[in-house]
Length: 111
Length: 114
Image (cartoon, rainbow over all chains, first blue to last red; front, side, top):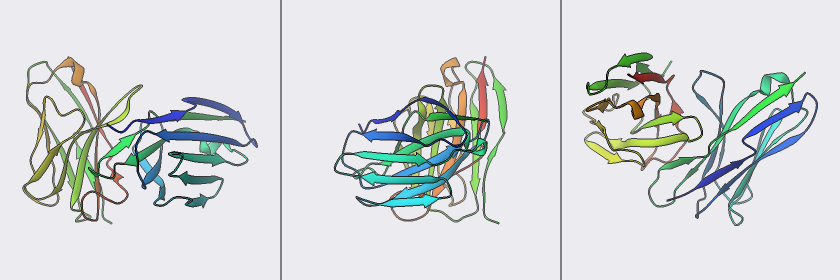
């Protein structure tokens, strides 16, 4: 079974600061997804990373994938309050096409 | 606009009752998925389907069943509800073959089993 670990689980940061969320997974995969979830809401797709070295950026968020290290990062630049949410990474298994989700990182941006 | 909907949005039931949660998508996606979300566990896959008449068990399928009679719907049935099945349930769909591609999620159903 594919295991996905995110860290940190909780992150409180000041507006204007930079930080990185890490997503490690246990077996080979070349497809990784990042989602955002606001409290009481559904999941919203942020990024799809489909190959080693893939980098995607949208606004203050940038995601990257290193399939050799089995690691993805979600980098936050100059955080603003609107980025407060829970962020999930999900890894697709190469064999079964199932998604395995990390436990999420709850981000709070403090003014 | 195409969308994915779930009903009911909130449900309270009693232990031992059968419960069915509905999921309907208008994207014409082949692939549909059911997850449950619990604190500390993220999302865990219950069942999934890659097309009509196709269903597969996920990581936490015990006590749940699904059927796929058309492209648009994948209802999730709890055969005999248990308190451990109190959770938030999300349905998702994706295009492409074999479950590849970004999954788009419904709004969720909050189920409480008393």
